Image 1 (cartoon, one colour):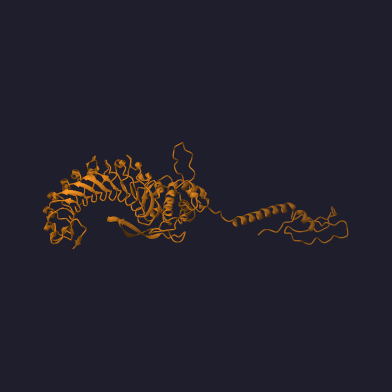
Image 2 (cartoon, rainbow, N blue to C red; image 1 turned 90 degrees about the vertical axis):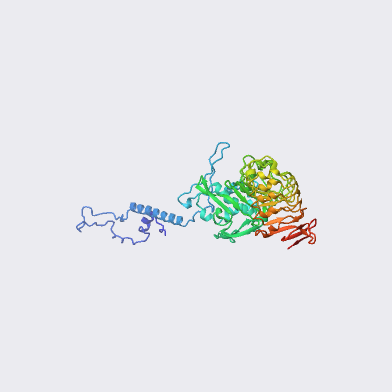
Length: 567
């Protein structure tokens, strides 16, 4: 409360009011004499100075009143100021923490190190940065320069989510984060928007929380595993939702490791990202290459379009199979500095050739280019330590590279699939020089000549499929050397002679297919007693005069026709 208005000294003299502003009675009027008698201290009249002028009392004095007035004014001003400050509303801060401030100028060509705003002791003093700063940062890593500012683009929608909807902002409001950390979260948010048509569709599992701002993070991730024939089987794994309050390194399919950071000293950085089989739509999100520590990316088994871009060649593992990619393999995708170890672009709509530069990929261990429309020849594979090659179901021609410039791959190759192409010429006599070869599938081509006897020296070989070619000649008894053989398919050729008895010495046999050849005689009966045998097919029709006799075949066929009977 404030004091009532104080009246001036003049008003007090004129109106007879005290310092509280209250009126008091004046002294009684004097006797009708012009003078008054002043009493002495002893009560007698003072004869020496008995005439005095009547005066009003001087208490309180004007000086004291002035001092009291100044004090009251100061107290009143202090009270008013305090009330005003107490009633003032606190300043509202920017809802998003500040990632960085502009770095100090650097010399031309020098990359400035990311710097972060230093936090203060009091949250109310935390500095703020306009949303434009964040947008400018995000614009450097996605799409065209202006995509972040174009309403309706995935880049824009992802940026707006970061600015206004990210439920982690409240807990992170006063944390330091480097530019790299902000870009990492933004790129994963952008991936979700770009592959759901701005959230008009959903992934198969672990989609964002239903309610904006929800702190709910848990979900069940449908984690896929690709099996033979390209089918997926799923395991249900507890995880965290995308676009949730959880750290992006805890989102389903994301793997991270701790790296050094100029701001926090250490942070979690994305090293592996697997969103296979999650019903993604749109285009391959090449912007993910801006994640500096990303080594492995699996976006296979989705509905993604686009082309194979050279920006991916810095990854160690890239899996894009079973999508709708078009175009060809860039000539500069492989070079002397290539660190890629695993590339799978199978089951797409790609064309062109396999670049000769593939032989420069000195760390490549697995190359999958199957089920596309690639033409040309299989190039020299150089010194790559290749273990797996799958180039089946293309339009590849020419001869196999087994007779061409040997390199490290001759010692390491285990799986060679090149069936259903237009390959021709003889099977290489040098097959026996590939000691690690386990799986050899080249059916459905135009190979001629005989089955090289060196093939039977490969003691690690468990599958031989040379069906549907134009091979001739006999099956050599040295086939018994394939001690680990499980599948032997020579159907659909022009092989002659008999199926040698030595084949029954292979105790691991499961599948033997010999139909549609020129073989004669009797299928070795010892095969009927192999406990591992599951499929045995031969030209054992018509029953009254079959070209070959078979007493335990699971399927009998009539040579030169499609007529087969399964037993």
